Every structure is written in structure tokens, then in C-alpha cells.
Length: 119
Image: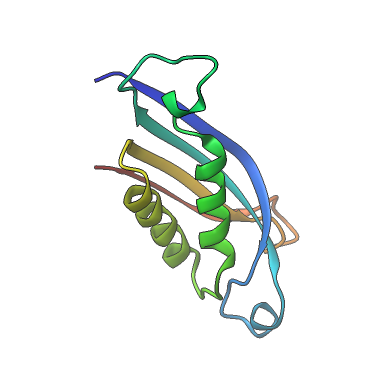
């Protein structure tokens, strides 16, 4: 079956994440890059959004999962995001996602975790 790749580049949000004392008290910025390979099961009809996977729904799921509760580890958060995407969107066959903390260290642009998983 053919696939279509949907991607997000530097989706920026504030999340409650971390184990350090200052991370437990306040949100911090996260940047998310994601690629999702989606089954193409029908032709695209330009006047009908129902013929494609609406990437607004994917974005909403990612944001909600990252902001709904405090999470201690990036590793935990990234696993939860991938699990949610697979659970809510049957047409998603592969996810490659990177979540980074751009403010974690002053001597680098960001630190983060990348995960790739297929069904």
C-alpha cells in the first residue's frame, strides 16, 4: 500500500517535564520534530478533507500528550506520544519523532531523544 509522509518541524510548546527541582516548579520549552508515514487508502479529493489524514488532528494529539501532565523523563514522554499516535490513528504505520529541550544547557542548542517505531 502506498504511503504519504506528514511531518512537523520544531513544533514549539511549553511542558511540565523533568526531575530537577526547578523543572518540577515550572514549564519549560520543548521542540518536536516528527515524521509520520500514513497509508494512502483512497485518492485525494481536493474539496474533501475526509480523503486524507488531517494533520491538525495529529498536531493536537502530540500537543495534548506533551502538556496534559508532568512527566519526569523525555524517554517516557516520547514513548507516550508514539503510543497515542498509533492508538488514535490506525492509518499511521511509522512514526519518527524527536523531542528536545532547547533550554537545558547553555552550551548547546538543545538536548533530546529520538524514537522511531513502525507497526
